[in-house]
Image 1 (cartoon, chains in turn orange, red):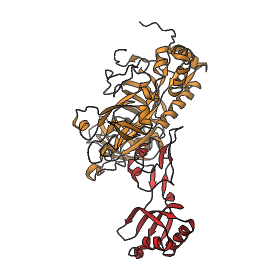
Image 2: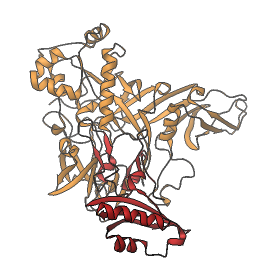
Image 3: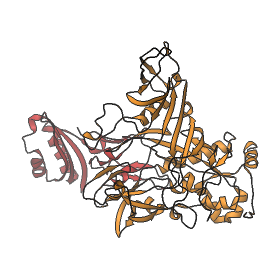
Image 4: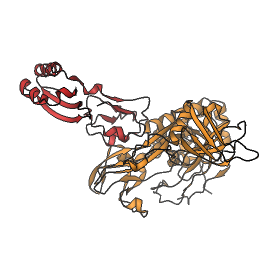
Length: 392
Length: 136
């Protein structure tokens, strides 16, 4: 067991938050604190570092229960604003996925499809308080005789609504280029031919899992900022992979950890849950997530001081290698260079643009900081840690 | 030297006339056609960058209006909807004129309508449809 010079517990930090004495900084500010004072002194001074991310996160959706109707229906098929939701759960429960496209959309038969409306947009409409048309069909049983139900509802008419996203907050992600001779349309956006642009999606040094690379403080039960409300980490996300390639600083150099997150949709807002239309690909949902990281010791101080230039990602060709399913990276780049707007890849100067909002990520980290300083948000100690890789 | 990007909207009656040729010849102006469209009912829109002496420019615009054409600055037809924009910056990778860029301090996406040439690449690149360009 490593001997730390500074040691704090979740309970001690929560006590300080209660008394209004906790020192909270954003992950951006922590870079300066550690540079100026070193990790040990920074760990003494700072109690919590706040992080944030706001990006299009597929693998999001909401469980909705619309309450029993009279006469009762066992809703096998459910639509909200003509977007199909999965009804095979229980009589009036359904799951609305963010990437479900509205029925009747031409999809990619008119290429590239515009995908103007889908599950992500319904979720945005719900949290905006807009009227949404609910439609349900059942086959009729002795206990649930009704076969059809239709009603205009708002989120307040739903008995229960919670966001439950199976895979969010990816710890690092591919950068995408197109080495072919024609424009392609991907979930990483429009990629122009002959590597005319590279797209990436992360808030880098502000991103939650980059600031706790081994998930020492983020686990099942961690309280988080989710869509503007307080939510929780529910489980390791799907495709969670702690054994990814890592740099010497412990930060993964490719897609690695992920989080399944949960929270009350009724408390969320469209500012932090926004529907997305991705040309030629489909629909998705922009999700805002912020995670507070307790500075339990000097290792956590050092981890939370990570900078864009120390975080690397792999560039993949989305025209051939990636879709075929056996991709080899074209290059490795760091986020400082990507964020500058141009990056060198194979001796070519390539225009770089993000799909994730650093501006909103920063706002989330600031909001969360305000909540903690104001005693409105307490740390949730993990009930169980996420699977992690060997500590370098 | 004065230079400005303008939008000219014309009716079906004018479509056969060499309006741009007359404008350049009579008023000593240099033009760069950024976009030209004719719609099914033969009405249309032209986006031009027009350069020359300020006096010539003003006379040229008056000439177009006297011909019965509708003329306005391109910057009036292009618009960043700040209610919708989430400042992801996907558009910044496509904008050929630098009209869309990150404000370094805040990482907010700024739009400078004066630099825009109306190419509309940002419209389809934007996942929340925040760019509104009305060249119809």
